[in-house]
Image (cartoon, rainbow, N blue to C red):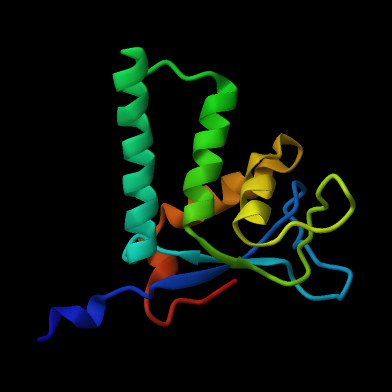
Length: 140
């Protein structure tokens, strides 16, 4: 039997839940979702390698691995952004001038914002489960 039949999908769609565990729905009435690169993808491997390289660089510079809460949050946001393919079009995050951020800047802003930290937590948990990327797995 070809073992590759057990391979996982490259991406998975996560339907976001609010802090009250209710589905997050945009003004358009559609679910707010995040499309994520899974642990079997090259994008995930790159994000993980970048995370490890940043830690090694920090150790070389400072000689210790202590991280402030802010550093840890920034590091986590970098990793999650590297694993994010896209947000649904109904997710917006205004920049300082009122326009909405896009792409990686949007991803980092959302994952860095502690007032909506439950989003980064959900994304991290979703990424940590290979089963969420199983071929034919239900996408909530």
